[in-house]
Length: 336
Ligand SMILES: [Fe+2]
Image (cartoon, rainbow, N blue to C red; front, side):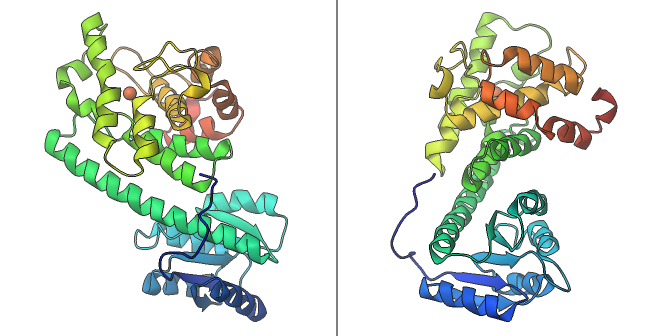
């Protein structure tokens, strides 16, 4: 998703510029007007949150250091409110961007740019974030449609095809390996929807305890193909359906349904595979208690380069992500 469309945007978009410095606000609003956008201005985080709720802008530029309410706090409030959560937020800083970037991620911001901002950089980032907003809208509508469909097929939700834990881990893993905000968003939804094909399988088979017969396993494998067929017509079809179809492929080519190998496996499917495996390992199963995080990481390391993409398992294991996930699951005691 690196190629940027050129030419004018299809309609005039509104950008909310938040900066306590008057000259900075004027400069940015002037640059954005030149690029063809409507602009609105706010002088601190509190004003920005109020203005965003009222105006529903397409994008918010948010200075970090501001009086009354700083940019991080404002960003957190915007992302916590469903009415404004989908609006991309571009944080702006005049300081060293490295520590600022992790604070930006923590606050739920979408990108960070260092001031003063050259016009070309501003244009590139703004266009990328406006595309992100469209992608979010598509993914939300896809998710809503699929939830409706699943509700009709599985009213008691006993087949549980939506997995928020795997989704959040897939998104974090995408961020960890440096994928852009759009791919992080797709990773979340791929993680959420990866087992949607289970709605086509009998409940008794999904809940069966003990070993599966070869026929039963062949039936289970079908959930990848079914899932891709279900998600196929929904946007963005070019990435979502392949992620679902291939989430049980293995790096060594011994997986299913297509025995894809190594980099031929779509990146989103590789990401979901690691996230899914880790969560399965640290969750109680009818046939075994949950593994400790240490044990789960050991299993991932052993399967690195065989079952899973070695780059992903290495990035995951050397990050603070496994511990953070365990923390959210009340697993602190089991980390050691
Ligand atoms: Fe699966």
